[in-house]
Image 1 (cartoon, helix red, strand yellow):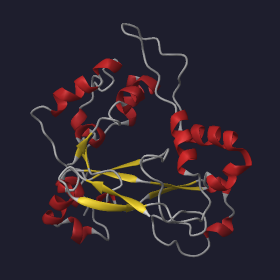
Image 2 (cartoon, helix red, strand yellow; image 1 turned 45 degrees about the horizontal axis):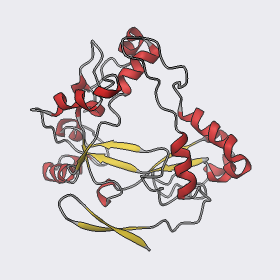
Image 3 (cartoon, one colour; image 1 turned 45 degrees about the vertical axis):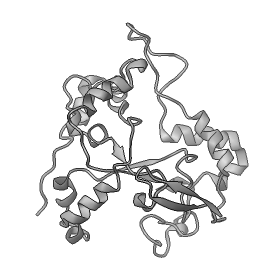
Amino acid sequence: GGHLMIATDRRTFYVERERSLWPPHLSPAELMSVRRRLPRPPTTTSGSDEKSSSKAYSTILDVLESETRIFGEYAKETIGPCLSMPRLLYGSYENRTNDYAAASLVWADDNDRAATPDGFDELDFVTLRYRWHAVKEARANKFQKAMVDVSRLRMEAFDGEAENIHVPLRYHCRKDPPRYSTSYFRVNHYLDSFEAYSYRNDARSNKRQCRECYDQKGREATTSMDDDIRPWLKSFVESVGHEKAKKLLAGAGKFVRLS
């Protein structure tokens, strides 16, 4: 079973429903309950630097520990130790004439959280520079990403070969990721500029030199636009302080061509 989805260019494609029963995992309804509990960054009141006391910054580990307490024993198998996450492909399309101007308007009702802090250039960060992406759950997004909590595994779990980089542990990792709409962790996968895309000297170098392949990937990621990730930089600077943020992010957007 499954359902049909129609892209903005009127292409129709079929999305299968979840079929894999192993390893045990949370149901879509349970996943949605987790999403509703996800913490949001603290906000400031207009004209004030005082952060809301009802919401605080949280890490991935904070979320996992909180949900493990809620689900109890049931969480031992259903929440990790290997979490599969759906990814969303962001392309390289840029509309310089109005995209950045529009970005400041998108978050205008949320204290302009999309604004780039002083001393930073949004063009140095793919998460700020690229806003167009593929249809969620479409084939263009390809394989899931996995996150493994090694503290919950015995050494024997690492014996043998991985099925692939997306399913590093056969017994513990799902072969099918949860739906994008229900997954509490998601991955933005950025195509980036052709210069960045083609500079790596690894096993995929030949494919990465193919400009036609790059352009095709880019065309598959121009169906929707959002700013969900953009507020991270301002929140990060507020969290660690401007001086420390500048130090930690030094060199962002720059890379040395590998020989």
